[in-house]
Image (cartoon, rainbow, N blue to C red; front, side):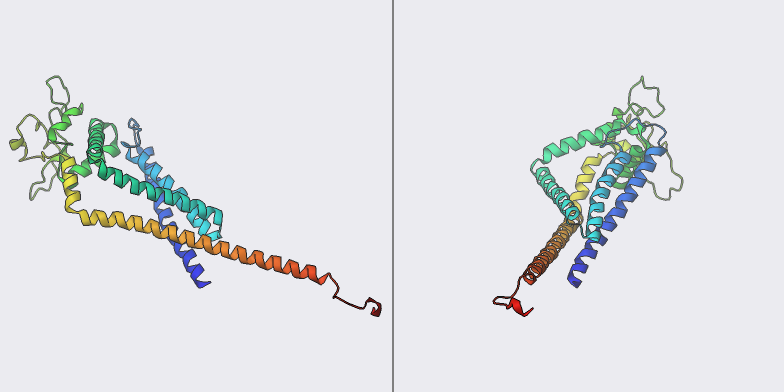
Length: 281
């Protein structure tokens, strides 16, 4: 019985932690969605708020089934939780294999998606913050290079562009100088007009796609550890759910056997013993 309680409450705690995290993701996504003044970007891949809401909702539903099923000993809910989690696990494995086998296609699709994000840079505040964070974190600018920002109408380098940021790059591309205390948001102005050697002194000129791939290769153990840890946790939750389902079935079979045994004993008591002398009554 102690083993069953250990399995039950370990599964409940794991599901509860993910359930709380998913609720926080939904809350942050809804808040970001409501706080937007305009809602131009409405695609899942280019809207961080919408992505948080969808991801959080899926996690919330799956972990809610696990929490309720583990706590109430509901085999049907645990089976549903186990099935969905197993499908998610195998989809992740399949995505990793496909990504490894078709690296060129994945890189091409990623580059196209990042270029769309640059085109819509000023249309969504959340998307703008994400791009600025990536460019600061990985010390990069654009997808393949800093001149990719010419694809954005605000930074397009042409004589007919009336924008003050024409031929420039966002301030997140700027090189942070030593002892600089005041952020210069105009440091990227006009940097597309100069050559790469001169621009490199003030802004990052390497594309973000190259730097992200380089960072992933140099931190392969970290990436593999995080991915393996997540997959291992999913396997543990699958095993715990399967063990609890097996235990519930075992208890149900035991109850059915006891019930059938008691019914047979009650039926036998209705029969008189063999060779009984009924006249003695």
